[in-house]
Length: 103
Length: 103
Image 1 (cartoon, rainbow over the protein chains, first blue to last red):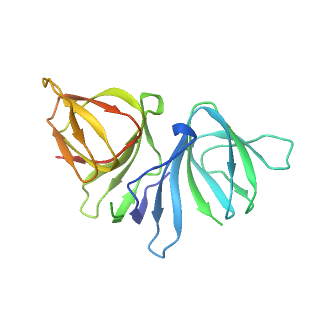
Image 2 (cartoon, chains in turn yellow, orange):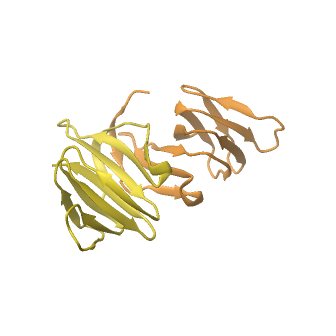
């Protein structure tokens, strides 16, 4: 994954689930908000407010959208989308590095 | 702590000590490398290659430089410097959000 140029970075991390997920928020030049984060070995459930697109930067995960039976894999360069006001389960064996885009 | 404008962000996190410390590296427009990270509750020892300046962004820590007896506190806006090829102990009760500058 290439570095992302010309961003404004918030140096205060977002820490979720006692540190099983840590991200840093940033904005692009046009004001679009995103975050870059990592999920460490865990099985977690995230709730969405706005719709999100999770893009894998390195490592990988399995995820299951709310209302879905099956786990799907997501690896480097792959994305999955979560609707607004929904949820997804994620399980990570090693590390899942991601960019979170708000759709 | 204000956001840091006009940086190039590496979206792949650096994960140390099983996730007790997580950072994202970034470069300024002039090519200077830094990282923004967080240390979660732990007592850790870090080794330096290049000299480093640790700047507290939020939360706080206690640190002890190699060869020093005493623990010092560092809180928001405060910095401490670690020589090259040295080490420091850090202990964190809640969270220590930092920017690491290479001196």
